[in-house]
Structure formats: structure tokens, C-alpha cells
Length: 158
Image (cartoon, rainbow, N blue to C red; front, side):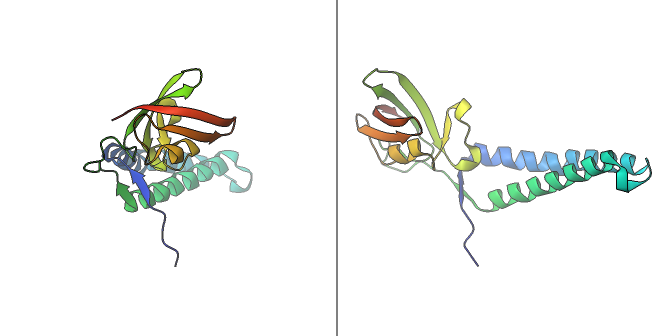
């Protein structure tokens, strides 16, 4: 049997996943079961779009619960490494400038389970994170992005 994928995450990220599982199990399941019950009361299930829709939603909810539980079960907690304060690693926030124009950006490198670029959290599997991991302050890094090659310089790690 193949080894299951490990999901790197912070304690906060794991807590959010556990809260979502709890919500899906305690509230969402009940709502979907109620929808199915109401749809059944409409009669003939062979041409009942409400019933079909509710059953599809039920499958989605159960699939999401299974997915989240697997992620939680295979969670590897991100902990700051001792003596590596100035080295980019999982869980660290990295500030850098784009060269030569000097635009400043900041990202926190997290596991794919809690990645949210809009919130400034990028997956450790992303090309940007892969280029930054293991680097230090003032390092110049070349990042291969969908828009082409980008040159950056790390200005801060915390």
C-alpha cells in the first residue's frame, strides 16, 4: 500500500480543519438529511430534482468529511527549528523585494492544507515557496512563475 501524503500545517490550521469537520458532522449533515426527507415527501424519486440535488450535496459533505479527517490524521505539525531563525522554512513569514523594480511582498509558507494566497499564505509546494525554502536574508533568488522568471531578494524572515 502506498504511503499516505503528509499534510504540513500549523496548530491554527489543524484547529480550523477540526472545526470544519465538527460543523459538517453536527450541523451540515442534519440540514442535508432534512432536505432529503422533504424531497422524498414530493413523491416519485425518479423525476425529483430536489431529491437528486440533496443526495449530491450529501455525497459532497461526506466526501469533504473523509478528506478533512484524512488530512488531520496525516498532519505533520510545523514547528520552528532551533537555530534556524534566519533561514526560510515552513511556518516562517518571508518579506522580499522584486528586482529591479523594488516591489515588496510578504508571504507565510504553510502546508497545502491551509494555503490561502489572498491571506498571504502560500503552499510549501508552490514554485515561490520551493525557491525560498532554505534561503537566508539578503539572498537573491530566481523564481520560475507562470508569468516568467522573476528575481527577488529576501529582506526579512520571521
